[in-house]
Image 1 (cartoon, rainbow, N blue to C red):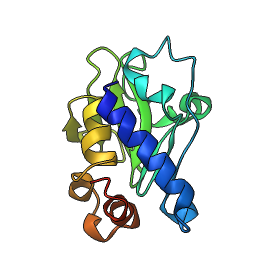
Image 2: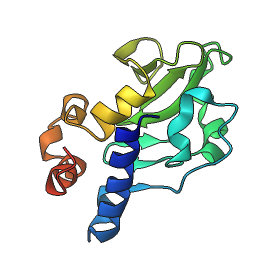
Image 3: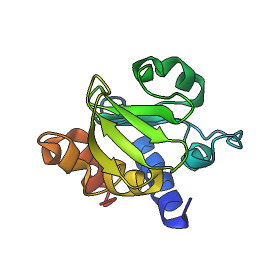
Image 4: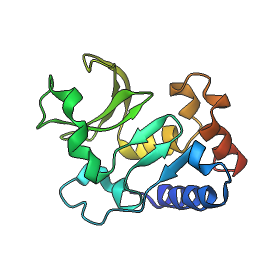
Length: 150
């Protein structure tokens, strides 16, 4: 994971600690040190899942229990890593690409190069508002602006 993204994640964690409405806005868990089998999930060393406004990222202990929506896909190739407004966010284990799928996991709604790109631009960045309806009014987006994180 690049140093800029690590800095952003640390800044978000620190800002959430002092934000009085943090329980409503979002939450990032402590990091996970046993990531060796999940090369594309390097962010887990910084935070082990969390709720970032309308985006949920599964923690390692919830990862296996949240694979039920992928039953139609090859489980050796795909991993559900979270959701955006209850639509699955999946990772291609081979390429490292991240996709937002429709609720039935039948078609891709959006593609996000890789997890670092998704985190930097959509979870902790300006592009959050592009995938969340009225995203600029969303409390997570307002929080990121308030603390000059975007």
